[in-house]
Length: 149
Image (cartoon, rainbow, N blue to C red; front, side):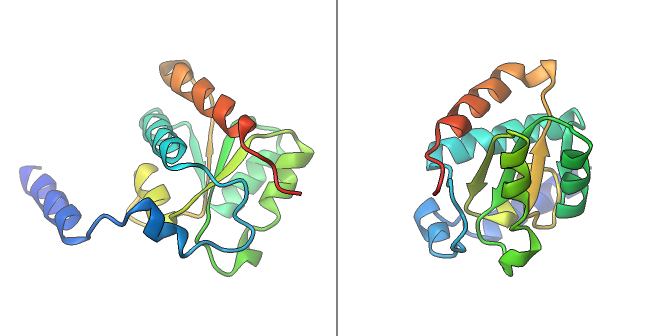
């Protein structure tokens, strides 16, 4: 167990933390509304809390399935996913069902926040009483983001 944590710490040091500004250079053209640096941190924190409670859905197929079933939550999309055809229908589904959604700059950071070693392009965070305050704060800020035309 201690060896695993030491290996994770060494791996984190080996991969340099890219700044928010650097990540913005890799965005695809449909990444609107984009979360600010501060909101991105809040969303990642909320995703980590939700992952501990097993209250997230990750991946295009799973998120799409549960949006169609009528499940509620915040949809967080990675802005650096290419090709965009993989997930360009998700924002339309969210708008049809009045679900809040936002883009964050990095799919690798999104996957890490969800507790996965693999990059993830879409995560749905479901509400839960353990992190309700953080969830509500994120919903409020995501809804306030300017919506693209």
